[in-house]
Length: 216
Ligand SMILES: N[C@@H](CCC(=O)N[C@@H](CS)C(=O)NCC(=O)O)C(=O)O
Image 1 (cartoon, rainbow, N blue to C red):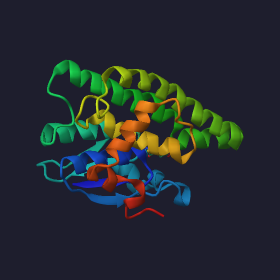
Image 2: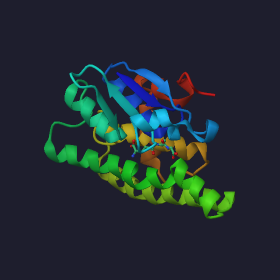
Image 3: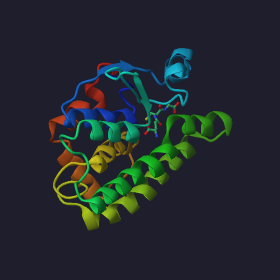
Image 4: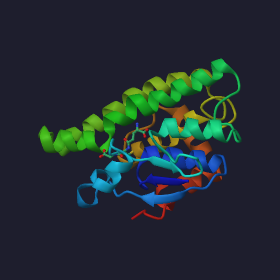
């Protein structure tokens, strides 16, 4: 397998954690999101992923090579193909709750603070750097407020119960982003606690941006 990603991409970070939890290896190929206007917009990458987003997973171990975009689809593919270690609970209701938490991060928070959105705000709409940061903080705080309430109900050691799941895989990269841009996390004790707990596990530690070969 090949994973096209970028050290600071939180969506790629999710897939790295999932691969590590499942003890799977993939060749990591860096797509620099900033250099030369962003390699995600290059012709070569467009052929792989017309969405111009990372990650992309290539699985050549198929009769027809599989080329997959979207981190949640990639992780669910890995989950179905390599059921151990399970990233979703066995109970149907519990699986739905974990997906609900994962999507609260991946579909509600992350897209609003994505690089291309921030670039559009500043470059096309003339938003100041200070207002861009207000926007960034705002959507993390709105999303984390809702997630914190879910965690009060469902969390154990991790987001759901006492085993890391897809929800933790989405949480840790989003907390990384929040810390990177100094979003205050005092109102989110469960989020902070679970992030710390996850970051004691090797699969999370090894997937961290600063540990990647393209980190600069
Ligand atoms: N929903 C997508 C989001 C992917 C995404 O937004 N990737 C970001 C990095 S975290 C990206 O490639 N951004 C490039 C850009 O905004 O130009 C997923 O989960 O894979």
